[in-house]
Length: 368
Image (cartoon, rainbow, N blue to C red):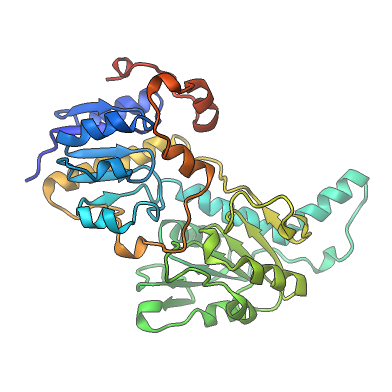
């Protein structure tokens, strides 16, 4: 059995959650390093067994060290699924599933926007206007068909909620879908099923799948044309799954009734992009309200994986070669922040807290 003797962490947790994380490894040496201090991070992992990271696997972790497991404290592992990381042979895990309940809510939020025509109703409210033209033709979610593309953590959470709304459900996943007997159809890519039956039958098509080379631009001119006329598209997955140019065309033509979009191929979405001003498009800036104590949910995943690691069992959320994404470009503000290489004396912690949240401690001795 493997034994964890030293852990190095860079996560940005508050005092209580740092204490709880430290207690996951009660017998191990536990070292905290600021995520931007790459020099110290490379030094501390030389004799460490485990690294718990705020961001993706940094190049400084791929030198000579004793690491046997790396955990990245976010859901998507595209940024870590690089050839040099796989070549190093260290298992890498993520925090997929920690925010699944509210991500499912976010999907429902977009779907209800499409049903209740929120923009028109708010405009009418501002004018003191009773009623909106065409509102007698509006329909709710009950009795309509939703197609869920991707039955991972988020897709499963969404299916349970939409079933409670009384919707008909069709689901598509790469692998066979286990359980969920109330699904009217279970489509499996590995068994030769295509996405077309889901697209043709669904009033709402909801994307909750991972971005890979296989799923890049899965929703393009061809698949958009297969969607039921008047369907509503929700993308809570990754921007690269949808060809933006083709989506704009489908919305302009009226083939789709609308879209709810939280992610985009280019982020932030340029201010002059046509999606901003389309009356049937609802946009959120890749931001979802958090679950209560999201860090606590991450810690539970880490706790279970620590048990599995020492017991020699398969790890949860293990990075796979299919997570590699050749079209993915880590150019956003988060990627730039995570790649910063600065000494502690050059960093304004107060400014970081505005972006990352209040840390409420300055010295690890406060929670160690």
